[in-house]
Length: 216
Image (cartoon, rainbow, N blue to C red; front, side, top):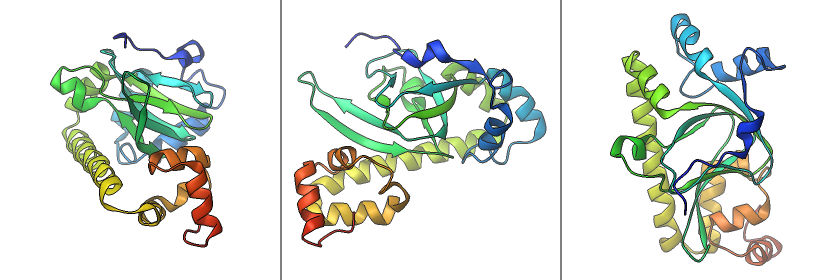
């Protein structure tokens, strides 16, 4: 895969201040997992660095193999991390929705290309900034940096737990675990995406539901 950043949504980028829904976006940013405790002086510094992107369902935000990386704060909709091989077979690593974030921070720190792609599962809106800008910003606010790095470690741990689950649990067990961990997403995700995340076919997921073995 070519080593470039492929964000079709870039054409629709705008700053927070210039966005027609600026007031709503500022409120959503202040509800974000990472940003809710920022002091006023940090907000004054961060907002001009952010661009707002609106993504269509299925739109690619970051390419696996890219070397230019971004930090994303999700305002509306659902994004997914996905890895693929040369044959085009894909594996979904995680979903992220409102008040969450996605990041290529670990790869940026290691100086390696993006190990996954980021794609919109539903129509989505996110606030984004380049990784160099984000790292420069958190370096000036040590409490935020510590919180961010802790959340990144949790995120990586959750991805590892998911991949282990695919090997250790049967189909009903995988679905039950997803409902327990991410129940708020069950009705929002396309069943095809949920099935792919659980390494099931949509038909298997449907059969499990029909037999009463799951409540999706």
